[in-house]
Length: 343
Image (tube, rainbow, N blue to C red; front, side):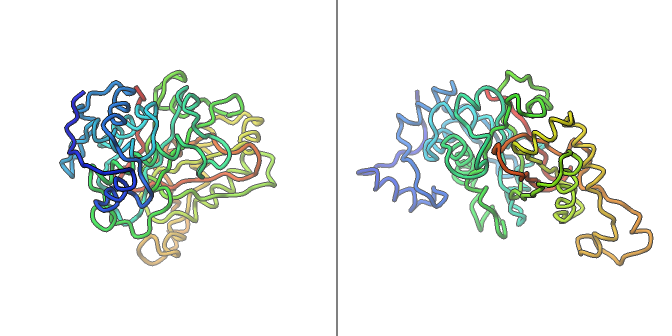
């Protein structure tokens, strides 16, 4: 296997780590030195030729090869068996529908949220339960981190340069979860909504802001829980771009929804209707321009473009009455979520 990346000599692991820091190749945390043997193991696990092009980032005119992705996957701490997931996520980032340049360079501060579906999630021991967005699971942490390191080291998405995020959020280190696909979930796996079968493996990428947690311990019906969610989402509406929103429901709220037999489509349709905001209110809170008129009180604006723009996901701990929503970046002309098969 012929690797073409530039080689660097280091006397020991500590020296290699300092070399990475000195060259700006880390996200601020220590990385694993990418030796040729480790990089080759990544490529072998994914059955990828080193020079195979996984993505081409149009605005940057950057070719992202499998070798460069494997190097950064090693640095992130991935096991070789994680490489197919990382490769599929990188492919998805190059999809014009995702529109890499917008969310990557915006002051809005989105991160790449990744949802993994299919048997591979269990095989890799990916977390879909307790502490869903927190630390503790190597696969979640390192797969998400690998994608960010590729963005940084291969595409050049550096803070203060290409990445102009005003604030950013913790998801820019790693923002990767698996969906709960057990019998406790109220719905079929998310990737089946994108044309994949339950048995296929897939990763969805989504340009996303931080999770917004809501709590509802009073409602014994889906509509009660969703009314709380919709009220919080209405407050979050910061523009008229109508981005997609991910909605993540952990165990107790899953159970309430499942007992009532609500489908994913029912959740989407309910939220589409109940998250509307009057144009008058958007003007009053200064996210829509102009003076409030009488007609504005009756002019209701939807939060998203279509009901399907609510990405309804089952994941999180069994106990607790919390769920969350995740606002996306941009809208129909900005960035949309993209799902790719993990090969």
